[in-house]
Image (cartoon, rainbow, N blue to C red; front, side, top):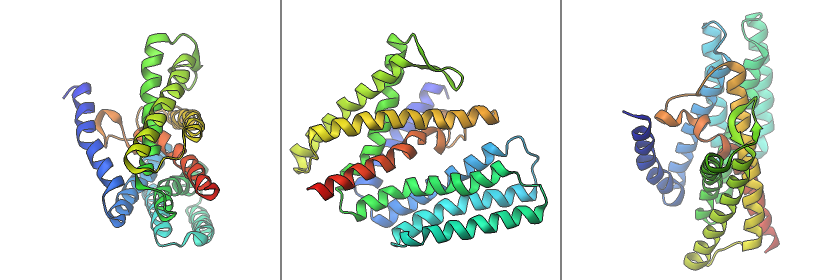
Length: 277
Protein backbone atom coordinates (compact mmCIF):
# COMPACT_ATOMS: atom_id res chain seq x y z
CA UNK A 1 0.00 0.00 0.00
CA UNK A 2 1.42 3.38 -1.02
CA UNK A 3 1.74 6.36 1.31
CA UNK A 4 -1.12 8.17 -0.44
CA UNK A 5 -3.39 5.12 -0.29
CA UNK A 6 -2.78 4.63 3.43
CA UNK A 7 -3.49 8.30 4.13
CA UNK A 8 -6.73 8.16 2.14
CA UNK A 9 -7.74 4.96 3.94
CA UNK A 10 -7.15 6.51 7.36
CA UNK A 11 -9.14 9.61 6.36
CA UNK A 12 -12.06 7.61 4.89
CA UNK A 13 -12.38 5.50 8.04
CA UNK A 14 -11.19 7.94 10.68
CA UNK A 15 -13.19 11.08 9.84
CA UNK A 16 -16.66 9.45 9.98
CA UNK A 17 -15.73 7.64 13.22
CA UNK A 18 -14.45 10.89 14.73
CA UNK A 19 -17.58 12.83 13.75
CA UNK A 20 -19.87 10.10 15.09
CA UNK A 21 -18.08 9.85 18.44
CA UNK A 22 -18.01 13.61 18.95
CA UNK A 23 -21.51 14.47 17.73
CA UNK A 24 -23.78 11.50 18.34
CA UNK A 25 -22.19 8.75 20.42
CA UNK A 26 -23.28 8.33 24.06
CA UNK A 27 -21.01 10.06 26.57
CA UNK A 28 -19.75 6.68 27.78
CA UNK A 29 -18.57 5.84 24.25
CA UNK A 30 -16.80 9.17 23.93
CA UNK A 31 -15.14 8.65 27.31
CA UNK A 32 -13.98 5.17 26.27
CA UNK A 33 -12.56 6.52 23.00
CA UNK A 34 -10.73 9.30 24.85
CA UNK A 35 -9.32 6.77 27.34
CA UNK A 36 -7.97 4.66 24.47
CA UNK A 37 -6.35 7.67 22.78
CA UNK A 38 -4.92 8.98 26.06
CA UNK A 39 -3.54 5.58 27.04
CA UNK A 40 -1.93 5.02 23.65
CA UNK A 41 -0.51 8.55 23.76
CA UNK A 42 1.08 7.85 27.14
CA UNK A 43 2.47 4.59 25.82
CA UNK A 44 3.97 6.27 22.75
CA UNK A 45 5.62 9.02 24.78
CA UNK A 46 7.20 6.57 27.21
CA UNK A 47 8.46 4.36 24.39
CA UNK A 48 9.91 7.44 22.70
CA UNK A 49 11.94 8.59 25.69
CA UNK A 50 12.96 5.01 26.50
CA UNK A 51 14.09 4.26 22.94
CA UNK A 52 17.78 4.53 23.79
CA UNK A 53 17.48 2.67 27.09
CA UNK A 54 17.89 -1.12 27.28
CA UNK A 55 14.62 -3.02 27.51
CA UNK A 56 13.93 -4.21 31.03
CA UNK A 57 11.16 -5.20 33.39
CA UNK A 58 11.42 -1.74 34.98
CA UNK A 59 10.83 -0.09 31.60
CA UNK A 60 7.74 -2.24 31.05
CA UNK A 61 6.43 -1.19 34.46
CA UNK A 62 6.99 2.48 33.62
CA UNK A 63 5.06 1.98 30.41
CA UNK A 64 2.21 0.60 32.50
CA UNK A 65 2.16 3.76 34.62
CA UNK A 66 2.32 5.91 31.47
CA UNK A 67 -0.74 4.15 30.05
CA UNK A 68 -2.86 4.03 33.20
CA UNK A 69 -2.36 7.59 34.48
CA UNK A 70 -3.89 9.44 31.48
CA UNK A 71 -6.74 6.91 31.40
CA UNK A 72 -7.46 7.51 35.10
CA UNK A 73 -7.49 11.28 34.56
CA UNK A 74 -10.04 10.97 31.74
CA UNK A 75 -12.25 8.69 33.84
CA UNK A 76 -11.98 10.91 36.91
CA UNK A 77 -13.10 13.96 34.95
CA UNK A 78 -16.08 12.01 33.59
CA UNK A 79 -17.08 11.06 37.14
CA UNK A 80 -16.84 14.69 38.33
CA UNK A 81 -13.82 14.00 40.55
CA UNK A 82 -11.78 16.86 39.10
CA UNK A 83 -10.98 18.32 42.53
CA UNK A 84 -9.14 15.08 43.40
CA UNK A 85 -6.76 15.26 40.43
CA UNK A 86 -3.97 16.95 42.50
CA UNK A 87 -4.20 14.09 45.01
CA UNK A 88 -3.89 11.59 42.17
CA UNK A 89 -0.77 13.37 40.89
CA UNK A 90 0.69 13.43 44.40
CA UNK A 91 0.14 9.72 44.91
CA UNK A 92 1.45 8.77 41.47
CA UNK A 93 4.42 11.14 41.75
CA UNK A 94 5.56 9.90 45.14
CA UNK A 95 4.87 6.28 44.17
CA UNK A 96 6.83 6.57 40.93
CA UNK A 97 9.86 8.14 42.58
CA UNK A 98 9.77 5.49 45.33
CA UNK A 99 9.68 2.85 42.60
CA UNK A 100 12.66 4.51 40.86
CA UNK A 101 14.60 4.62 44.15
CA UNK A 102 13.98 0.91 44.75
CA UNK A 103 15.21 0.16 41.21
CA UNK A 104 18.43 2.00 42.00
CA UNK A 105 19.04 3.95 38.80
CA UNK A 106 17.40 1.64 36.25
CA UNK A 107 14.73 4.27 35.66
CA UNK A 108 15.88 7.65 34.33
CA UNK A 109 14.46 11.07 35.17
CA UNK A 110 13.13 11.65 31.65
CA UNK A 111 11.18 8.39 31.89
CA UNK A 112 9.63 9.51 35.18
CA UNK A 113 8.67 12.87 33.68
CA UNK A 114 7.20 11.20 30.60
CA UNK A 115 5.01 9.08 32.87
CA UNK A 116 3.91 11.77 35.34
CA UNK A 117 3.99 15.08 33.49
CA UNK A 118 3.53 13.78 29.94
CA UNK A 119 0.85 11.25 30.85
CA UNK A 120 -0.90 13.78 33.08
CA UNK A 121 -0.92 16.47 30.39
CA UNK A 122 -2.19 14.05 27.74
CA UNK A 123 -4.99 12.83 30.01
CA UNK A 124 -5.95 16.37 31.03
CA UNK A 125 -6.12 17.58 27.44
CA UNK A 126 -8.23 14.69 26.14
CA UNK A 127 -10.59 15.00 29.12
CA UNK A 128 -11.29 18.58 28.03
CA UNK A 129 -13.95 17.25 25.64
CA UNK A 130 -15.83 15.76 28.59
CA UNK A 131 -15.54 18.97 30.59
CA UNK A 132 -16.92 21.02 27.71
CA UNK A 133 -19.87 18.69 27.29
CA UNK A 134 -20.53 18.79 31.04
CA UNK A 135 -20.47 22.60 30.93
CA UNK A 136 -23.37 22.55 28.45
CA UNK A 137 -21.38 23.54 25.37
CA UNK A 138 -23.06 22.39 22.15
CA UNK A 139 -21.51 19.11 21.04
CA UNK A 140 -20.71 20.46 17.60
CA UNK A 141 -18.21 22.80 19.24
CA UNK A 142 -16.28 19.75 20.41
CA UNK A 143 -15.18 19.43 16.79
CA UNK A 144 -13.34 22.75 17.00
CA UNK A 145 -10.07 21.40 18.48
CA UNK A 146 -9.83 19.03 15.51
CA UNK A 147 -10.91 21.59 12.91
CA UNK A 148 -8.56 24.30 14.21
CA UNK A 149 -5.66 21.85 14.36
CA UNK A 150 -6.06 19.90 11.12
CA UNK A 151 -7.00 23.02 9.11
CA UNK A 152 -3.92 24.85 10.33
CA UNK A 153 -1.70 21.88 9.47
CA UNK A 154 -3.26 21.48 6.00
CA UNK A 155 -3.19 25.16 5.01
CA UNK A 156 0.34 25.54 6.39
CA UNK A 157 1.50 22.61 4.26
CA UNK A 158 0.09 23.97 1.00
CA UNK A 159 1.07 27.58 1.73
CA UNK A 160 4.58 26.41 2.54
CA UNK A 161 4.79 24.40 -0.67
CA UNK A 162 3.59 27.37 -2.73
CA UNK A 163 5.28 30.33 -1.05
CA UNK A 164 7.70 29.02 1.58
CA UNK A 165 11.15 30.61 1.55
CA UNK A 166 12.04 31.47 5.15
CA UNK A 167 12.52 28.64 7.65
CA UNK A 168 10.38 28.74 10.78
CA UNK A 169 12.33 26.41 13.10
CA UNK A 170 15.01 24.70 10.97
CA UNK A 171 16.66 22.84 13.86
CA UNK A 172 13.36 21.29 14.93
CA UNK A 173 11.37 20.86 11.70
CA UNK A 174 13.41 21.83 8.61
CA UNK A 175 10.46 21.78 6.19
CA UNK A 176 8.28 24.31 8.04
CA UNK A 177 8.38 27.91 6.85
CA UNK A 178 7.20 31.28 8.10
CA UNK A 179 5.03 31.66 5.00
CA UNK A 180 3.45 28.28 5.71
CA UNK A 181 2.84 29.30 9.32
CA UNK A 182 1.01 32.45 8.22
CA UNK A 183 -1.00 30.43 5.71
CA UNK A 184 -1.99 28.00 8.44
CA UNK A 185 -3.30 30.78 10.68
CA UNK A 186 -5.23 32.41 7.83
CA UNK A 187 -6.70 29.05 6.85
CA UNK A 188 -7.76 28.55 10.45
CA UNK A 189 -9.64 31.86 10.40
CA UNK A 190 -11.48 30.91 7.20
CA UNK A 191 -12.50 27.52 8.61
CA UNK A 192 -13.48 29.06 11.94
CA UNK A 193 -15.72 31.64 10.31
CA UNK A 194 -17.34 28.97 8.13
CA UNK A 195 -17.98 26.94 11.27
CA UNK A 196 -19.73 29.88 12.95
CA UNK A 197 -21.83 30.43 9.83
CA UNK A 198 -22.96 26.79 9.86
CA UNK A 199 -23.70 26.91 13.60
CA UNK A 200 -25.71 30.14 13.19
CA UNK A 201 -27.63 28.80 10.22
CA UNK A 202 -28.37 25.27 11.42
CA UNK A 203 -28.47 25.50 15.21
CA UNK A 204 -28.73 29.22 16.07
CA UNK A 205 -25.81 28.58 18.42
CA UNK A 206 -23.01 30.74 17.05
CA UNK A 207 -20.50 32.38 19.40
CA UNK A 208 -19.91 35.39 17.16
CA UNK A 209 -17.58 36.05 14.24
CA UNK A 210 -15.27 38.36 16.17
CA UNK A 211 -14.66 35.86 18.96
CA UNK A 212 -14.12 33.09 16.43
CA UNK A 213 -11.50 35.12 14.57
CA UNK A 214 -9.58 35.59 17.82
CA UNK A 215 -9.97 31.93 18.75
CA UNK A 216 -8.92 30.74 15.28
CA UNK A 217 -5.78 32.89 15.23
CA UNK A 218 -4.85 31.89 18.78
CA UNK A 219 -5.39 28.20 18.02
CA UNK A 220 -3.38 28.57 14.81
CA UNK A 221 -0.41 29.73 16.88
CA UNK A 222 -0.91 27.14 19.61
CA UNK A 223 -1.41 24.31 17.09
CA UNK A 224 1.96 25.02 15.52
CA UNK A 225 3.62 25.21 18.93
CA UNK A 226 2.13 21.80 19.72
CA UNK A 227 3.35 20.34 16.45
CA UNK A 228 6.86 21.71 16.93
CA UNK A 229 6.95 20.65 20.60
CA UNK A 230 6.31 17.01 19.81
CA UNK A 231 8.70 17.21 16.86
CA UNK A 232 11.34 18.53 19.27
CA UNK A 233 10.86 15.49 21.51
CA UNK A 234 11.11 13.09 18.55
CA UNK A 235 14.29 14.77 17.33
CA UNK A 236 15.88 14.65 20.78
CA UNK A 237 15.27 10.92 21.14
CA UNK A 238 15.99 10.04 17.51
CA UNK A 239 12.68 8.61 16.27
CA UNK A 240 10.70 9.38 13.12
CA UNK A 241 7.17 8.65 14.34
CA UNK A 242 5.64 7.92 17.72
CA UNK A 243 3.73 4.93 16.36
CA UNK A 244 1.99 3.32 13.40
CA UNK A 245 -1.63 3.26 14.59
CA UNK A 246 -2.68 5.56 11.74
CA UNK A 247 -0.30 4.05 9.17
CA UNK A 248 1.47 6.88 7.30
CA UNK A 249 -0.06 9.42 9.68
CA UNK A 250 1.98 7.89 12.51
CA UNK A 251 0.70 7.36 16.03
CA UNK A 252 -1.67 9.21 18.35
CA UNK A 253 0.96 11.81 19.24
CA UNK A 254 1.83 12.34 15.57
CA UNK A 255 -1.79 12.88 14.57
CA UNK A 256 -3.12 14.65 17.67
CA UNK A 257 -0.05 16.64 18.77
CA UNK A 258 -1.67 19.96 17.86
CA UNK A 259 -5.06 18.86 19.22
CA UNK A 260 -3.52 18.26 22.66
CA UNK A 261 -2.40 21.90 22.77
CA UNK A 262 -5.49 23.42 21.13
CA UNK A 263 -8.17 21.63 23.20
CA UNK A 264 -7.48 23.47 26.51
CA UNK A 265 -7.45 26.81 24.64
CA UNK A 266 -10.81 26.09 23.01
CA UNK A 267 -12.20 24.98 26.36
CA UNK A 268 -11.13 28.16 28.15
CA UNK A 269 -12.47 30.49 25.42
CA UNK A 270 -15.81 28.68 25.13
CA UNK A 271 -16.29 28.60 28.90
CA UNK A 272 -15.58 32.33 29.06
CA UNK A 273 -18.08 32.96 26.28
CA UNK A 274 -20.72 31.10 28.31
CA UNK A 275 -19.96 33.22 31.40
CA UNK A 276 -20.24 36.44 29.38
CA UNK A 277 -23.60 35.58 27.83
